[in-house]
Amino acid sequence: MKISKNFEFQLCFISTKQEFKSIELLKTLLYGESLMKKKGLSFLIAALSFQASSALPPRFQVERDIKQVFSLLNESEYKNDALGNFESLRKKDGQYELVYKLSYYGERCTLTFGRKEVERPFGGVGPQEPLEIKGTPKCITIK
Image: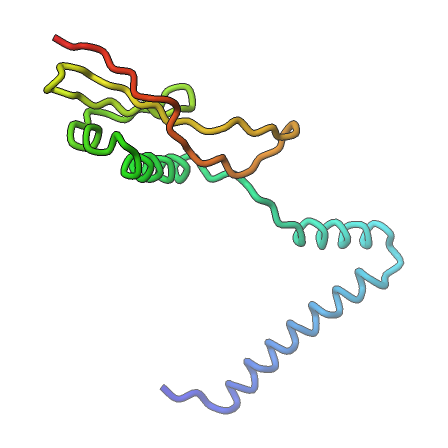
């Protein structure tokens, strides 16, 4: 498909014309008489220039947590027992509980994963602390 030189010139001219309008608008806002326009532009520039570290959306945080639970478990001393006899993983009160069964001993064990509490100012958000294993497994005898 061939594009004529006239068409290319028109596109270039339109693009240049729009950029020119944008520059003229900025000049008017910056050097204009209106104080409100200056405040509005200052606010807009300030709002767009800040970067914030925010929390992940719940869907992505849960995915990240589950990967981290199994990564921690893989590095722990409970790896063989828990991964070989895994029953369930559930979230309860902000902590994850991994339940596995030791059929040889007739026990069902629960290993808890949690994170350190972080003090944040009122309304503050940010990334959550990484998960860690909380204590040793709590085992109960099953019949």
